[in-house]
Length: 119
Figure 1 (cartoon, rainbow, N blue to C red):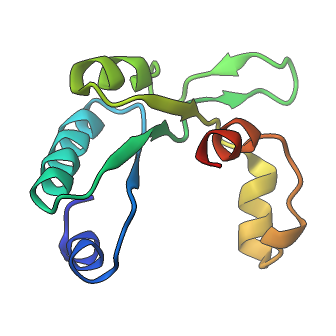
Figure 2 (figure 1 turned 30 degrees about the vertical axis):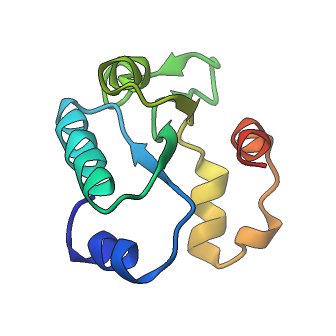
Figure 3 (figure 1 turned 90 degrees about the horizontal axis):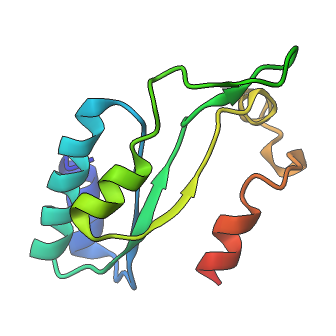
């Protein structure tokens, strides 16, 4: 976002770069562009974009369901010139671990690509 909290972080914390996290909704493109302008104004490098909540995999038929509409990750990347680092699905197990306070016990390859890129 572009509210006071991210602005304050960019002003106070020395950053090597940031990752913009977005979602598939149309409104998200506008927010991403505002966040990119803020990062540029604060002289903070943008390492890339991650699209979160892109889809879910139906537990019954294993079909990909785009709950919030089709992915906008590639479109956002092309229109801004910022690399798309990953597209992440909704994951019920992750949400359950967060709600239970047991995030350390979450096991998934979901973030493997993103972590490899960030090393």
